[in-house]
Image 1 (tube, one colour):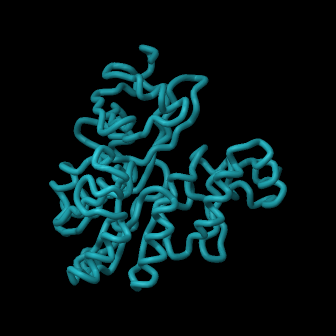
Image 2 (tube, rainbow, N blue to C red):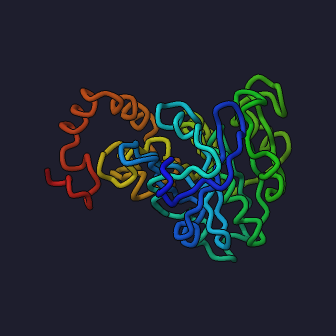
Length: 300
């Protein structure tokens, strides 16, 4: 919150219990970022590096919108920031932009796309839905959460998606059931056809969406942002098995072909990485592939 830091909070909004939206003044990032990419924020010199996917950006005003859930020590401290406070670092854009951005207009016009957003994963879904609409393409979107209180960005999403389907596990709002049950309803009962699904949310949600869409024969893209820690390939936390290849979410992603992601390995690995003993086991087991090949630690 030091006054000499330049990445100032211009707007703060509470979206749900412990979920916050902030517009941060970061002109260089705003000028160069695209949907799908992320930033790393750091509150002060001793603060933790926190990777956050970009929710929105305004190139003219020079702001970048982030959404985060206050669940750990650092994010709980972030939640105390108010308008006028500032971050020491706001680094980005990092990662690869959504593959939608580089598709030809002809290719996009032939695709019917369904976005599936789970919880805080709605934040990185939003800029892609917005980009599609601004470029003349209509898409459908499912927003899922445990209950009504945890549904976020619904009104914003409705501005840009052709259809927005709300689903809650407890049935307190919208369709009763999880996102997979909603997908099945759309495809089997409502006769919807989709060529591409883009699913972003908790790991377990993305895993089961991919199991379903593989059965349905629908190509699916997922964002592996949940496994990122350092955001530069140095820590090895976001090492993934994508098909028969080793990839790193922060450098090679965060988006990947969901049908090629080894979710079980990724979830087990994330649990192991939480302890020093687990990190040591992973380093010894993975050897030179524990870090990204471009990291200076790669040969150590």
